[in-house]
Image 1 (cartoon, one colour):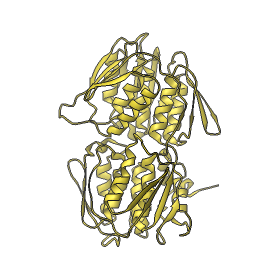
Image 2 (spheres, rainbow, N blue to C red):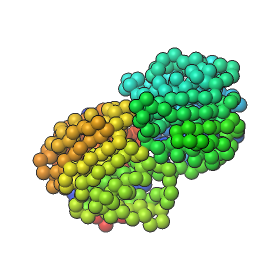
Image 3 (cartoon, helix red, strand yellow):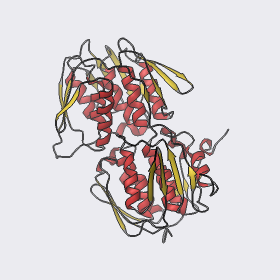
Length: 440
């Protein structure tokens, strides 16, 4: 069936005809899926992954691993991963697209292959920070050409290094990418984060996710002191895994309930998780929505008002685009803090959010580490229809559709870029917005 996402040109954003009432099944976590794939590729035997996200970023990861000698069989969504005895250099350049997990997690595996593997990506990939990971691989004994995409990693017969210090203030993925492969380095890994400016590691829950998934597979990894990890060499045990729903992707659907005084339920919500997206519950509650987790079903119900919020999203910065849209319709002035590093995400998200919310009539300004947003209230006083730009960034589409939910006449230029994490997002969104009130 042809969907709007298959159609070129600006996409007319559906306007809420009234309170949104829906039950939305959100695809699996991208962060968890790509970590599970990579760990399965490193394991001491075959394993299976259920509930894996099927989207562009995870497809790129699967193709990258296959090119290094991993076998991945897909049986109606059940992935069976068989690792090679030793990784082999990729015969063709590995396409990273715009996926941070691919460009930062796969080079350490390539360093375990005796030979050269090249990495390429989308045009915007070359500006995404990567140098700390490549610097670490040089210290471990690999030969690396380049400091960003495109680059080439050549693994020696044996990696002899062990201790590396990097500045991970630009992305927690620098730490995760090295930790994930650390047990397979001949001497293990001693990894330290040090920033000359004293900046901390952002999105810290993603590091905790990495550590938990390593420990679940028998890897001996300890944080001997803050920002200092030791990974002992040894096997990565094969471990079957079920992937949680992507809680960050769920945020945009839950926000629709808060904006329209409706009610949206997301099933499969974990009672305990290392996903940073879980923080959306606290943000929505503080802004005035009713939030209830009953069993594994999370329901957000709007109350007809939104309060301004002071939100430090350093640990969950992927939520910034959704929270910014909520703040646009809040009563009062909101501040989003601790997210300076998202200037290096798929696009400069702070500059993009400032520009696009201004385009819709919003009063927004960048700060050193975030945004200050003067809310227009749910009535949207002073807001206007706008042709919003996505910058090929799936999360900026989430901002746009929330603006267009309450401001008639808005469009977004590239809804298809949401395939990075949700295939056919446009259909899922339109179905939710136009669900009859009695649909739960």
